[in-house]
Each structure stands twice: as structure tokens, then as C-alpha cells.
Image (tube, rainbow, N blue to C red; front, side):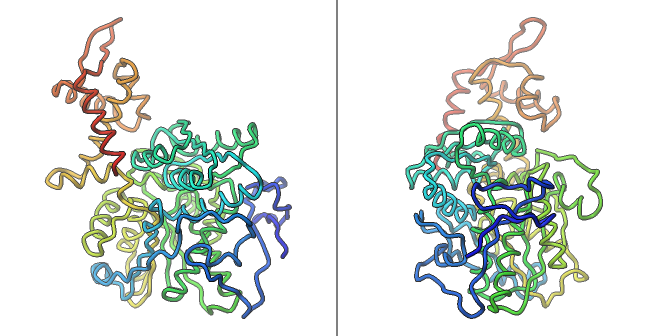
Amino acid sequence: MKQTLKCIRCNFEFPVNPLKSNCETCGGTLEYMSSLPEVGKLKISGRQGFWRYEYMLPHVDHKVSLGEGATPLHKAERLAKAVGIKELYLKDETRNPTNSYRDRAAAFLTSNAIDQDFKTLVCASNGNMGASLAAYSAKAGLICHVLVPKIVDVGKLAQMIAYDAVIEESGVIVDDSIRKAADLAKETCWYQATAELNPLVVEAQKTISYEIDEQFAVPDWVIVPMGSGGTIYSLWKGFKELKKLGITNSLPRMIGVQTEGCSPIVNQLTEQSHQKSCNPSTRALAILVGEPLQSDLAIKAIEESNGLALTVSDAEIFASELLIAKLEGVFAEPASSATVAALQKLNVDKISPDSSVVCLITGSGLKATDVLQALTKKQKAAGLGLAVSTKQKILKILSEKDSYGYDLWKQLGQIMTRAAVYQHLNELADRGLVVGYEENDKKFFRITEKGRKVLAAFDEIQLLM
């Protein structure tokens, strides 16, 4: 079976080993290419779950598994009625072992790493990929070194800690962490398991499309959240392969969704690439990527499928998260809920009410602690969760050393006004969790013993989530 890494921009080909993500000639993204079985001769493994499709994947000898794949495709009848679509399905990847679709990639990458005699993996992640790799590395007896940005869902971080990953904070958002992971892999010769830097991730995630076809058929539309851009292309590639094999005669149209505060791929598709801003205060941290390294893959999927790309607001995401849970009993993380928010936003001129639509639910809302905190106080504004999280972060910083308002503002990533930081500090002081004092013409803050107890309680609760 011929296997190469092919540049999607200039079509130059490279050997598959060593694995690399970008073309040395033009800098384009490299795609893993292998010859497919002859039409009508596809073998399906007798295994269940992800490894059922091993004959459609690059070969590995050591198969690591925690029972990933074979996730349900829910027919969302009540939600379909609410949004005005005849057939709506939720591909529920929250049912994977660590509650996200990244378990497919983690299973495959750890297997590949063992085949190549690696003992340590390095991964830059703002959540799901790091949690998945930490779990599968634990299963396989490998060391997992995860680089996380300052802004990360605490529930996902708790998973990494529980699975005994080596965790290092690097940068404010995941773009910074990815750059560090690229340098670290070169310096240490560790296995590069960052999703954006390993083309095998696309191969693993394309199995989602295989399952959708087996569970239902090829839908008219598939809606996918976009961060770095690789996920939407993974599903598109899977459907294209099914057509090449003669398993289906149709292809879906792909819809990519980003948040209004961070939408570089949508901006590029709508010729607004000059808009480079990325607001790190969005709830959808899983798709908070300012400089997506796989944007060319996402654009290829959308353009080849005659698809669409759009943005949704945080308010629309949160409303959709509640709607999915209330009507279908699926608790989706904010990035996943963006897919339903997008469906509601698209009018009938874009999607016919008679269409069949699949929304990819990438991960569980149980990992997004900001949302959990907001949901526990329904009578208050939805922004309460973010406020609680911010106060927790302030207490965490002050537990390490005393600080003052401006410095705290910088350490929090400058995601709010300095006045908002002082408001949080004043509220913490009113509750006896911090105290202020003057030094060198600056007002410093110190965490109290009561504040340390409250912080410890926060940490204990989050480890149970």
C-alpha cells in the first residue's frame, strides 16, 4: 500500500517517516495519503468501535484502546422541531472514554508512538486533546507532556492531572503553546502528538464519517465547530473516501462554525482576513485559535463541498447549550453547541427545512466549568459562571504571592477591563477572602486563610467533575 505525505497546496510528496505537518517547499499543510482498497473489497474488522475501521487507517501493530468510537447518532426530533428542520441528528462524541472526539486521535497516536519506540509524547492543547492523550498514555505506560495556555477549561485540566500528565503552562492561548510544542519536540526528539502538527489526527477522526454513514446515511449537511481547521476536513475526507469506495453515491455539504470573537477562518473565506483580532474571553475555549495552522484544510472542505462558514455569538452558544440539554438530554460543551446555534442562525434560503443535518458534538459540557457554574444559578445572569471562575483564578494567583491590580490584570490574560479586576478584588475583600495593604505607593492584595480554604474547596469540587 502506497503511503505518502502530500502537500495540499503544491502537491509535492514526502515519505511518511519522519512525520511532519508542513511542506518543506511551499509551507502548505501535509495530508497523509494512502491507497484505498478496491471498490467492493473493503474489509471491516470484527472489532467494535474505532478499531473496526483499521483497514482504512495507516497500519499500526500495537493497538491501544479504552473503548473509543461507536458513539451514538441521536435522532434529535424535539430539537429538529424547535429549529425547523425535518431530520436532525447529533453525533454524540461525549460518549467516548474521556468524553470527547479526541479519544479517536489519542488511541491512534499512542499506538503509532509505541510502534516507533517512543516513550514520551508532547502535545499542545487547550483541553480535549491533552486530556485524551494523558489518558491513553497512562493506559500505554507512556509519559505525556502537555503544554497548556493560561486560558483553559479547568475541567479538562483536572483530567490531565488525574491521568498523571506532565503539565506546563505556555502562553495565553493555544497558538502560543503550539509553537512551544514544535520547538520542544525538535529539541527532545519526543513524539509530536499536537493535533495541528501530526497528520495522523485527520486519519483517526475521519472514522466519525464512517460511523455516520453506517448509522444513518450521508446527510445533506454536516455542521462542525472550527478551531485550527483540521476537524471539519477530517469528516470531509471520510465522506470522500466512502464515495471513492462506492459505499455511497452522495457527499454532504460542510458547514464550519467559529465564534464572533475569534473567527480567522470565516474571515478568510469572506475576504475579511485583515481582521486578526481574537477575543480570549469567549466561552468556547475549544475553538479559541487565533492563527489556525490547518485553515487551508478547512477552506478546502468547505469549498469542495459547496459548504458554508459562519460565526455565532457567545449568547447564541449558551442558549443552544441549554436547548440541546433540555430537549435531547445531551450536555454539550460550548464549542459543540455552536453547531446548533449556527443551524438556528441559518435561514431557509441556506438550508431547506426538508434537509437532513448532522451536528458534531465534540465534547461534554461537564468539562466546561464556566458553564457549570452559570447553570447552577439559573436565577442569575449567565455571566455568573465566568465571574466565579475569574475570582477563583485571582485566588489561585494570590495563593502563590501577593500582587496588585495591574499585575493581576496581566496575569489573567487582559481579558477584561482593569476596573472589572478591581471589582472582583473588592468583592473578594468584602467576603474576607483577600485583604489589601499599601506598599511602595501601590495597593497590594493578600489571600487570607479563609480564602485558601475556599480555593481548596473549588479545586476539590473540580477534580470530582
